[in-house]
Length: 229
Image (cartoon, rainbow, N blue to C red; front, top):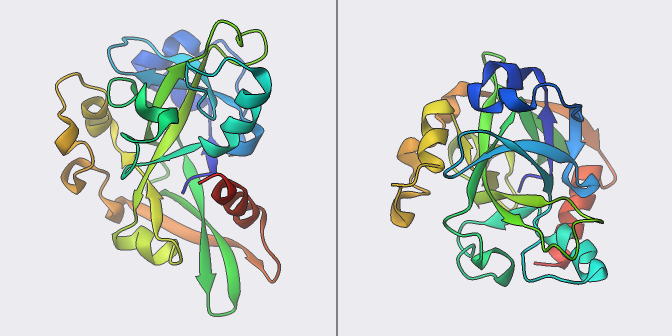
């Protein structure tokens, strides 16, 4: 699962396809999916990035109340069921996208209790998270972003399976070259989640930033998400 990320707008200036958004104001630092921030993403078939709100609203949603409730259930999309769920069927596989981040947070069950870990690249650089996006119905665009997105999660493996050691989930992580493959038009559905072109987890570092005797914010968010899934 991926409900919190670290976003740094300086990465936009380093990425040619994102520079068209460099003069905009963006939220920075630790961001929660459940605050539904608007962030820059690059999508399949696009040369330039655009803004999209976290929490996918499928195009068939027409009512404001339904859209508001649904977003809490669509901040992530499971790779195993993304082709089946009504919320994602209109987006998968054509409307794939990438989000550049500095890091993300995962829950961990340690010997002394629950912890929150920050996952980053060991060299301090940024990487991409893979997702999918949707165009919001024109009936809702006065109240919601014109486009929204969801981040893909997979069964955790390697280092990230040791971190998220209860439900064993992880986001889809990629470096620049592989991120281009993710949004490339030629990529087949069969190959999309193959580990061979995902980010090598030996490039990652992780550290505990919070120990909790009570349920942490990230675990509360996990529970909220689970209500809808």
